[in-house]
Structures are given as C-alpha cells and as structure tokens.
Length: 135
Image (tube, rainbow, N blue to C red):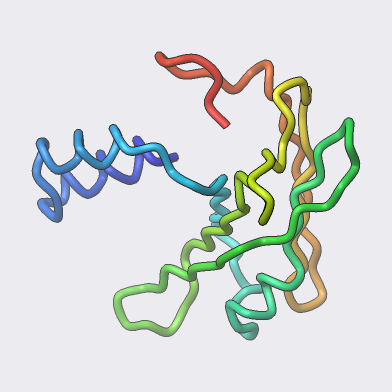
C-alpha cells in the first residue's frame, strides 16, 4: 500500500523520486489498513473519531482486539465525498510489547460505519515483499 501511494505521488508530481525512496526507507510505527472502493457510502455520514472507535484488528491466535490509534479520511477534490479511509493500528503496546506476536499466522480486521460492517482476513504467510514479511 505504501509503495503504491508513494508511486502515485511521484507520478502525479507531488513527490520526487528521491523523496519517495526516503519515505519508503522509513519503517512505519503503525500497521496501516486502507479501505477504498466504488461504494464508500457508509463513511460519508460519520466522523473519523467514530470510525476509530469501531475499528479493530484481532490476531487469530491471541484473539486480543487491537483498537485503532488513528483514522484519516482522504476526500475528493471538492471535499464532499470520502474516497479512501486509512486506519492505523499500533505495532506496540504502552509497555513496548508487540501487539502482534512474531508467531501469529493471521488477523481479522473489522470496521463499522453507519449501518455497515466491513470485515477482512489476513494470512501473514502471504504478506511478503523484497525485505521479507510485510505487515
């Protein structure tokens, strides 16, 4: 997701190639999930804070819900419609422990907005990039 966003910024002239490379070299301090599609109606009438309260990432093994730490809406040029929702989940607890253990095999994501709940499952064994596991 990060690579695609950076590449889009470079292609649209909003970022230089070298700035893009610097951005991708940084390791984010949160897991980032993006919700986008042709039907973003459930997010049109809610606030980011409401989505934050209703978004969870649940590792399959531990079953401990991880609440969102931040939510960002990306809106259309006129600011009227939500086009993309980015939901951030912390990688570490307040005590510094990993929120998702190294031996986890996957996680369930859910977010509720308006009268709609969106769910997705992630199989970590299928999430790799050139540097290894990409969570």
